[in-house]
Length: 375
Image 1 (tube, one colour):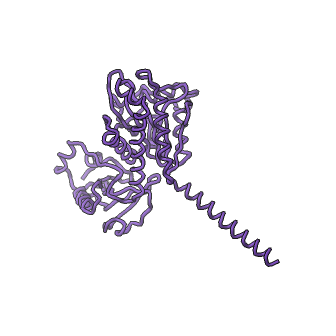
Image 2 (cartoon, rainbow, N blue to C red):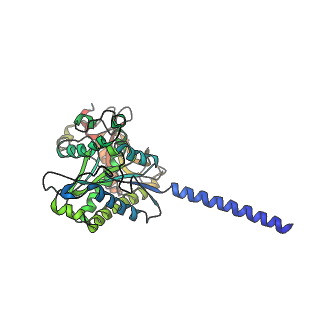
Image 3 (tube, one colour):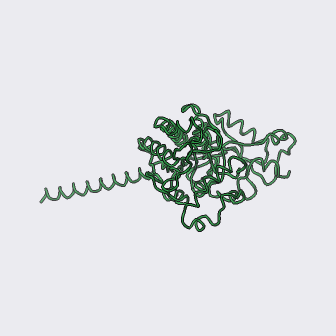
């Protein structure tokens, strides 16, 4: 009888431990960094056919290579919008990422042009649809015409209308800074590691990333219409090099987020030359405007104590999506906030930058605050 009781106790203990192990494993899976990889085009949508190469095939090969390498990291979960030659509607690609509560969305494409243009481009969402950027957005967005009931999904969106493209992307606005960081890392890797020509980071109104609720980029790995570049991208070695550059950028981005509040920063202060030249003539104090110094962005929720921020006090934080943004100081005096920025830089936050908020507590462009605010 005693033996039977002991067996029951052992069974219950083992059951309890097993349940804890399963729960822990489930938690670990939920804590993984989720990357959604989107191979552009597919199925009856071949993409561009520069020099006889099919964009859909090259994009898929590069995407699968990125995913294979990322999956070697136990802390990363990779989700594909497609792993075979099938057609996935643009809105569904975003839905896949949103349902997965992804941390990143990366869409892979190949470029085309009537000339021998060459080079990589990485796009984030934006309203700057002039010239070449608009042509890229138009070409990628026209895929909707291959979808059934596209009018229902895109509410009358017209890819050929600049006014229509300006209206999209409200959901992505809060993630633009993080998207830019990833885009820069990708283009830097193309230049420094893959030894490819880069045409830089661009902004355009692209439907495939308009409704994603996480940092998102669209990568053009090169021009199939360029004789040399097209041939390069059609080789296994070329595709592997491009995939490695993108994979390394994703890992670097993740490491930067995981490092909580290092010297790198998610965002960049932007002022045009005219504004910089006239700063000395502007009022020092702006009524209705609050300036802060953004010193870091992290996936970790840190206490706003000096020991977490290299001795800096007067720290505030704001959760945006899955990230926490950390700010130093709060003032309506622009000269004062510039002093705070210099202090932050001296502490090691070399990429810190000034942000501005209006009376409603909404973040606005710094340039807008400096030009429109009244003394």
